[in-house]
Image (cartoon, rainbow over all chains, first blue to last red; front, side, top):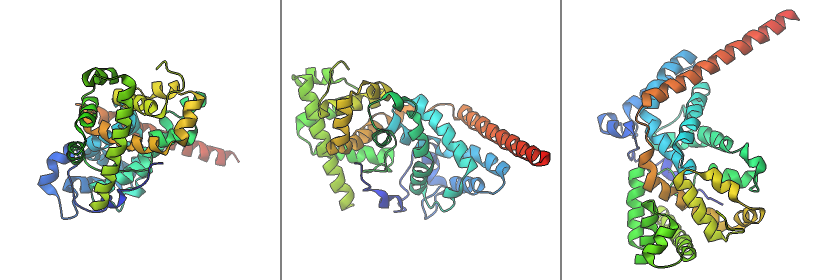
Length: 224
Length: 101
């Protein structure tokens, strides 16, 4: 089962860049705690007791966090339309009950809190109705679509790319090529043709390589 | 996905492709009882899915940003307005039921 490896990094306060608008404004107004000034103000408005003030604060909050949140959701759903639908409910839930966001210290902490308290609940509902006709148990379905925060899941897009690039460099040429081609969007048949092997062999190669990458990522997070 | 009772590496590969292509429901529907059991019992599968999500994010996460955030904000606001309305209606009906008693 997915285990929690990287949670402590959420509190590290490193202020690593997050995607979207927040990325652009990071240099303009970050304090020592690593949070954008405008985001901090929007959060203050969001946690007000008056619902109308919270509604007004929602616009800047959405503008500053949309990119970060939708990219995070994309990890679990892989489908832009579904991501937007889920995120719409997530923001409305935040408006309705923003109490969990009161003590947010930095952007990573924000992402972690929003994922654990708001996104997961909505992600679990995405395929719930479908689950009645599936063989996968409800728990396994939840682990697949709305898992606990696992290995490096709070890393920003840029950091993730950097780390993966470094890890890919440590793989054997054939393993690296299979993963790189997959990440370019190539089908398993296409990769098999490229590597002059069978589709079955490619799937096995990918599986072993992914497990190898996981071990490397685990070591990386433990070292860090 | 015509194969019956795929092995764990095939299931992972199919999950990865489904996630990448945004068609997870197709993968979920394709699972047989035996495959679902195989997934449930395989620790390696669950470990690998973590990395698949990261790879998916690193490789394709940048393509998801909707150009018109303003339109999305109006959707969020409409959702909030509807919840506000619902809240008011439920309070009114509660008050009415109290009054009738």
